Length: 86
Image (tube, rainbow, N blue to C red):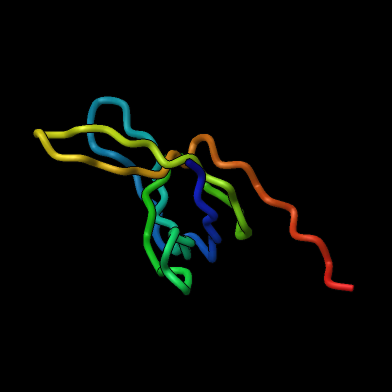
């Protein structure tokens, strides 16, 4: 399943702690969820910056500590080209 995610801006950036620090980005986004009328505001963690715009992002389901977990795989995000209104 894929969800539409609209990236508004990069809210924060930083470096991970550890022996080999890597950059990270917190993105201000809106996610369109099935069955919910309006897009929901969220902040998403990403290892690479995404330019503002609309993306199709895979939803990955897994089990963590015997509980279901659903995450957006931003590394597989595909930018959606919006057509101009006539």
